[in-house]
Every structure is written in C-alpha cells, then in structure tokens.
Length: 366
Image (cartoon, rainbow, N blue to C red; front, side, top):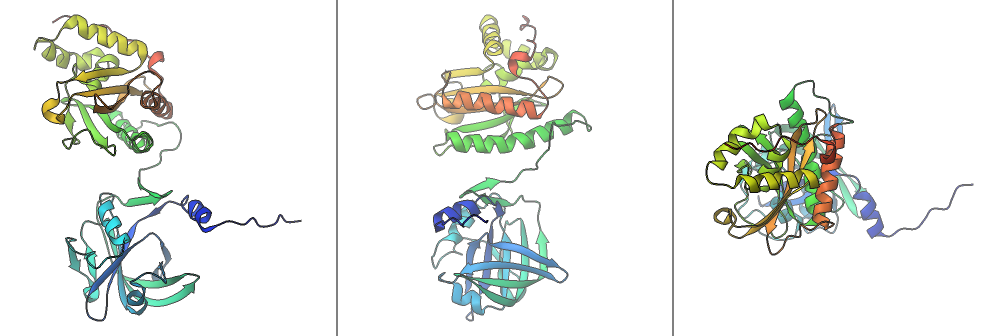
C-alpha cells in the first residue's frame, strides 16, 4: 500500500527547489512601441538541439507579463559571475531597469546586456499555461559565448561555479597543473567558508615574487576597499608569508627571508614565530600596523597551510580583519573553520595535516 502524500506549503517547496542549482539569466524584449523590458529568471532550460529550442517561464502576475506574452522575439542573457548587481536590478519592478546598463541591439533590435557569459537570441514560437506561470518556447536564431564564467544560484543565494574534481587529485601534468587544480578546489571552499563565517578570507599561493593572493572573499563589512588579487605580501611580516616560511622547503623561501632579515627584522623573534606556527598548525598575526597604508587600519590575521600528496604546502588559507573585530582565539568559529577547511582540502589533495608534516630547519642567520 502506497504511503499517503504529505502536504507542503509554498515556502517548503521553494526551499526544496532551491536545492537544484541553476544559472541566472535576464530575459529582454521590446514592446510594440520599441521600449525595452527585462526580468531576471532562472527558470530557463534547453529543450532541443535540432531544431534549437529553449524554454523559460514567467509569472502571470509580473508587471511585464503582457509585454512578453505578445512579444515576437526575446534574448536570453546568461549572466556572468560578476553581474550580481545586474541580476538584482532586473529582479525588482521598476521603470528604469536599463538606466546605466550598457546594451547593444540584437536581432529585431532586442537589447543584449554587455558583459554576459553568453547570449541566445530567440524567436517565440509558442507558449503554454503552467499554473501561475506561462511557459515560453523559443527557437534560437543566433548565439554568442564569452570567456566569462556564469553566475550561479541555489539555496536562495548566489554561488560561484567551479570544476568538480572527483577523488584524490592526481598530478599527471606536474606541479603547475596540480596547483591549478588545488586553487580551483579551494576557491569553492573559500566562498562557502566566508559566507558561513562572514569573514574576509584570502587564498594564497607561492609565486615568482613570493606569497601572492589569488582570491579574496569579502565579509559584509570588508576590512578595506584595497583588497585585490595578485597582491604580493612580505614573507616575514604577513600571516600568509609566515605560513609559507613555516612549511615550504627552506631552499624556496630562503632568498626572500634573507632579504627581509637584512632590513632589520629580529631573527630570534622570527624563529620563535615560525616554531610556534609549526607547533600549533596556524599562524596568528595580532594587531599589526605594518599594512595601515594599504588597509587603513590595524589588522589581525590568521593563516593555515594546505598540503598536496607530495607533502608540500600548496596553498594558504588566510583570514584578515580589523584588530577590533576579528577573533583569533583557539576554539573561535574563525580559527576552527580555517583548520577544518584546510584539513578537508589537504585530504582531497592527498596531503596531510600540519602536525603530520616534518618541520623545516630553523631560519639560518644571514
């Protein structure tokens, strides 16, 4: 005997549907007077390759529904991952959605929003009732793709799309390929952790010029407007740099360490900081004023290492914040989250925890 169907409300259904992650589009068209209309929609799907058909749906109560119901053409603008503002703009009712939005005319004059990941210019060939929505079926007549990554939506929030690497990460292409895969894997984890903790997090790698930040995820209250990717940090006075100094082979870091020690840094204090980092598995930098010109305030930071299957550190996960706001104490949500995230990434990469990695030799005097 079949179990009886369980009742559910619209909110519960929305939450379940939110588990299906989608891209984000803005559908644009023109009315009879040539005025542009647009709305954000993730109810978009491919139907057929031959002939090329797609569909999307719109609420019958939407202000622009009469326009789309009668329009002969529309464009599916697939938004890029830096177009959250565009998505929010077209998700709300208003007469000035296109104000300040750069567009170009497509087939039939229908606007294409600049900066998107892709466009599909379509001719409406049919529409079907679908409860409180109307489903539009369109035939694709022209397409275009850019190098931009698409914006993703799921669980009621915007997400970042990243490649999924199954299992432990192999390194057939050598160190650079392995590091690229590690960065891809870590980026998604960084986004999720920053969102959960509401803290500013950075992803660091060892570059030709030393510790380099390749990704920032900002908190709702960013520490500074000057955060930028490609930022090269000092080795011995930044949390990210100290993490690499503590766990990378000394022959890699030694030239940078010698150069900074020559600027008057205390060798004994540096040795103590590195030894403490190796013992605790985390670097803490509390109340530093060395970056006031960059960040505009005294900052505190913490950094933890991520290891690959060769036992070498490949990434640094770093949190920064104003000294008055950030909590770097043992057991704090931030420190616990960094540790767990780094351990999970190291496991995925076939690596080990900091406690399992042999300590490097202490810094040698210049």
